[in-house]
Length: 339
Image 1 (cartoon, rainbow, N blue to C red):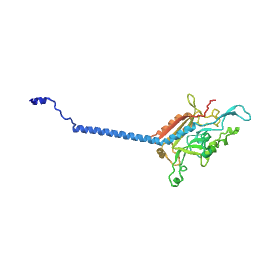
Image 2: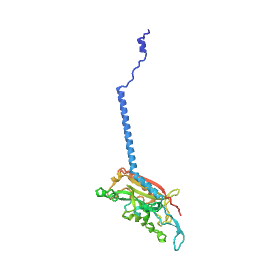
Image 3: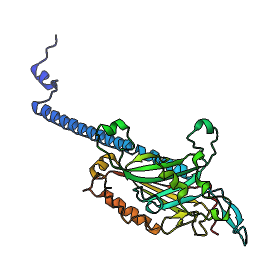
Image 4: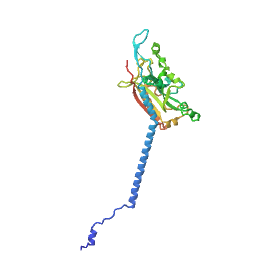
């Protein structure tokens, strides 16, 4: 029988059970708590950012849809030009002629005085086939309509159901983007333009103001809180240049190179603010100040004016949440010639 001596047992390493001290447990718990707090803080921040981004996207969804509608419709503008004598009695040369019209520029100079507008407006003809009587005119998708876009500031009393007005609900004054749509069966254009020499030189505005001056005008609200709309006709050279000095492009005007000729490109810019900012800026029937005074009147100052507007809206004291939409629109029916 082999007997192990104490000296032999002491020489072998003793296997002790590993463990943590109270201090180590407390430190580990503190570190874990800090990590959990940090993770919760990050999660909360991500959720806030997500909600904010989603909220902004929802707020400007209406504006984005309206902007896409403008650019799509505008690209379909047509003039249906042809060449004819400059005079029926004493012809000397051929000139571009058209009974259709295209007009863009300062809204204050284009629209009737009864409309409180801002920045720019545009009106034109296109084969949209829109009719107020789909039964009688169904299937005629190529009928010509007079179309247009402009901003108007005013009350929503005429846009609400009558019970809302009689219930004493306060009026809401906002900038609104309007789309004018004159049905084909009501087209008044040819009343002013025709085959005679006098009508071919017609330069009036009643070809679209007739539809706007009616008690139930042919227009609808595309979006609220659209505060600026700019149309900038451009020459598609290697270095795009402005076709006008003051943004006005009138195919019935006196400018030889513009008369009866669609612009090949139009840079469309739209500025929208959110409803929270609109409520904060609301001053009743008086339009709020948005830094637009004197801007977008000279084409060469477009970039500088846009930067001025951006700085004004970025002012932290004003706390205006806004979005700027910009796109270069190619006019499909334009057959541009510099001659």
